[in-house]
Amino acid sequence: RLDVLTQTAQAFIDVLAAQEAVALNEELVCLAGQVFNTVKVQVEAGKVSPVEGIRTRVELANSRIAREVSKRGLEAARKMLAATWASTSPAFERVEGQFEMTKPIPTAKQLANRISQNPDIARWTVEMAQRQASIKLEKSGRIPDLSIGGGMKHLNEIGDVALIFGLSFPLPLFDRNQEAIREAQYNLARAFEERKSAEVVVRTALAATYQALSAAWATAIALKNDVLPGAQSAFDAVTEGYRIGKFDFLEVLDAQRTFFEVRGSYIDALAEYHRAVADVERLIGEPLGN
Image: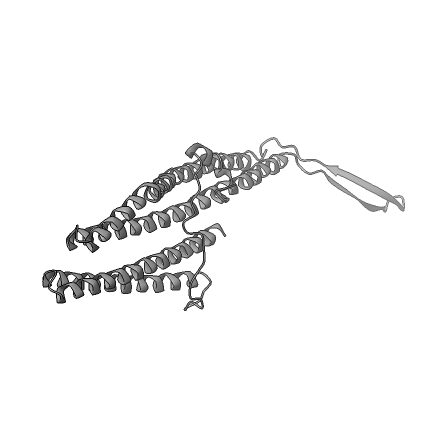
């Protein structure tokens, strides 16, 4: 069940991220179109070189290509999500979710202390209880069963009938069920070792996933709080400066690329964060916020 939930959650996250990417590329196409029209007017008026007009046309074409690629990516993500409930085609247009919501993550030690809920580990509690019960069962086999018998016997010599009652109790001089007991004890010891091995696998996977989670969280926070505001301010300043003739087109283009690349990186970091959250929740067997 956890595997299905994790797969579905990550497919849902992929659709959310793809929707954000399409929205970002739509905005970029709109902006590139505005820049192209502005430069076109300036070229026609002889204020700027026709080369800048060619560059803006190229940028507009590239932004349209990126938009179409992102749309195809969204369609693929929608189909993957629909496949989690055995649908061959998505019957929905979009999904809704708090994509930009991030929460501070617990420490690695706190998460490691919660892995007992992981089904790959939890199953061994029942398994070892069963094997301990098997030892008790085999030990009980050392005590032979008491056989009780009785009946009627006709005595021909005296012409009478006698009641016969008998007990039998085999002496366990040789077979004390030791072989079966040793096998049951071995199975219990093996269960302890297999549980330890499963715990090592889970802890190793959790350590790697935690690194991915913490890195994605730190990247998303840094981009949101530090990088994005700076890129936004630089883009706005250069755009305004270009309008009044303080900057040339190449500076505008560079600021635009930087701004949208940062926003794309922010979308990628958020997607990695949410995917890592789903992976961690699978490993600890419960929601991260519990």
